[in-house]
Image (cartoon, rainbow, N blue to C red; front, side, top):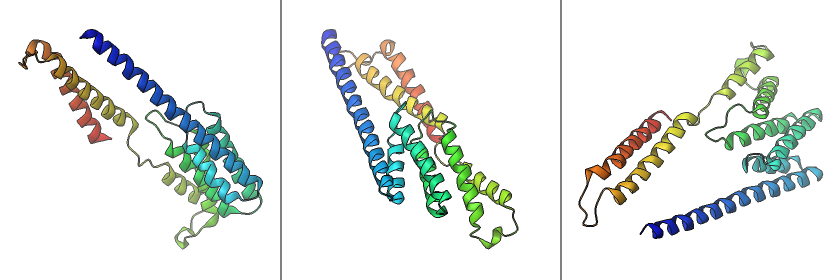
Length: 217
């Protein structure tokens, strides 16, 4: 029986590695393709379409991916170029796409990102220059930019720490229930507390972690 479980574990491990390889390959391929399309549209003087594809390339992110970094640099330089040409509306769209693209790739461990912080600074500055609302007439450019920057800094997504607690709690909960099904009962289906005690406590701990994470995330 143990050899069967060992072979099953090996097969499952190979399948998981293969699946992860396919997923990572897809992400890298999509990011590279979107970056190539963005550069092509920029070369053809179609900055609106270039911005769209730069944003998509940024969203297909992998750790240490060169395409992700190149897309960020390309979008930054395009935004500066558009503003120097007087097209502040499109420059604002570029900065917003950069900030939104990076935010869309946020993971449990993502923290301060210099490129996104700089993009938010530029968004606040351009919005302050526009002064689209009459209620802002009494504010200086610096005050208005600070107000916009504060709003851009607000986080509405789930808290990363409690999200991690939620996911780990669920993993422990499910894993403990699997162990309970395997070790807590004999061949006749009779429950044995001596062997089931560890999985039961593990399932309880995992469920509590899951519930707490769900509450605060």
